[in-house]
Image (cartoon, rainbow over all chains, first blue to last red):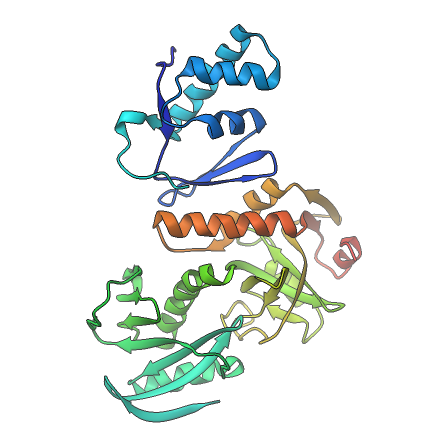
Length: 100
Length: 263
């Protein structure tokens, strides 16, 4: 399944914080806690409503010293997971301010 | 018990002050029976030194010129809570059970201002330190409490944890568990949080901070769906799990589980 290039932004209805190298995200209306590992956390931190998947992949490649192709594949896979879980929403669809 | 009858802006009321986790509260009650039940139920937690947060038991919502900061409708009891910056109204709390439920809900919200939270779990004091045991229903919280010496149980039902002066302390609460009695009105520095599971042999495993959070989150009492409140709660819990050691504790139903715990 292909992932639209974005841009994406954090779902403004969620609360989140970093704990050590991981990110914990909770929905105030659902009893679900999401956890992101260090790579997911890096991506999460850099999703800002402006960057595209390609731009995020470039940041990932620089941070983790992987090839551009591998970084793009990882980025798209991670984005797809975050979008499927409704942790990210299209930037244009957001209506509220971010949690933090 | 500092209880006195007085005439206030809402007519003839009785009031008394209590302190839970060093959170000062003052109950204003016009129903004599509810007042009597509440006074008895919270007797061990009576008294307050700091200016208290007032709680008015009302038959209906009373306009006070403010918009509530937190609202909770407790449909099972046909009761509701409206919390404002310096007071709260409990509407329809006709008995001690409903009052107790609303008090837990209110306290979970007030604690956001005090770097604290309520956790469904038992807390036992040993060597002047508080061991907090939590877990799903049936995991053994009450069993742990029943296996502990008399007087060492801060609570077998709802633990209150607060960060004060750079230190996490656990407090007893007046909320009843299987002991059918209020917890102890005292506190101790937290030694650790232990996620319980019953097993044939005692076994303990340290947890990473995120694992501890995953373990306690289902047992944290919190009732607001408001984003900012949840963000604040997550900040408090995140700090707690980074600063308090967390463990998985598989234990058998006897006192030997204490030997597995870190001293």
